Amino acid sequence: MVSNDRREFQRLRLAKPILALLDGQNALILDIGISGAYVEHYGRAKVGDRFMLLFKWKGNDVEFVGETAHTIVIRKTGSADVSHSGLRFVQPVADAEKLLNDMVATFVGKVLAAQKANAGAIEPSSAVALVDLGGARRARTRSFLTYRFRGGSWSREMSESSAQPGDGFTVAGYEDHHELESLCRAYETTDEEGRHLIQLVAELSARTVKKS
Image 1: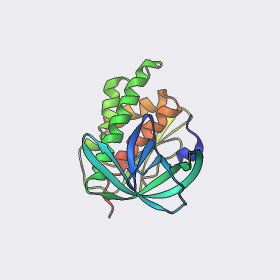
Image 2: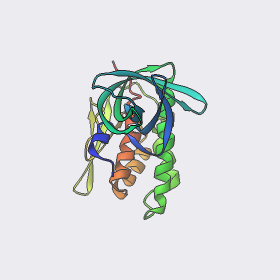
Image 3: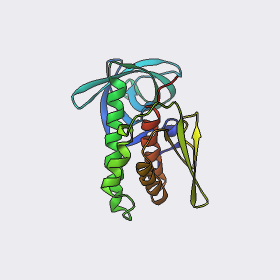
Image 4: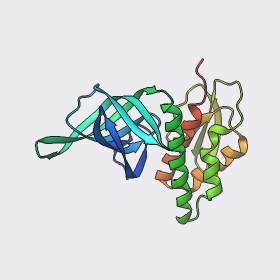
């Protein structure tokens, strides 16, 4: 289980850390989502400090200005401190946001597909559909759809907020009905970690809605 301090943002726990540079110094990304990352790095940081975080995806540089949301020194190595810091992404560089969305969707799809081995809850084909939500038909909309699972049944309502509820998920208002049914069935049958991953996918969809 991921501890609460590592859940401040919707993030994916990485089985293998991603090598990165934090202001030009070596670092490891332990968790990552579309809003921020949890990073192991040398030195101390303070809440509000800003850093340049750089890593690779499919051979491309992915770079963000990140702001420290929380930080803690976990150990000393020789004369250096080693810290774990939660960074909030505040400014993408070039195509960083698009590349990050693709990376998160790819990782989530692999994890959801792997869960098929655990009680057969999610078929690989369903996982592909989930991470493909952002590619569904586009429409001129500024709204969102919020699904809530309560008492064994679903409710659905239009919303002006992209926030992910604790008992369901929120996606862009134009998403395909059949894909959303697949998302609901997957949500019903998976565990807490799987539901967290589904919310990550839903968040990718919600971020495609253009702000007015």
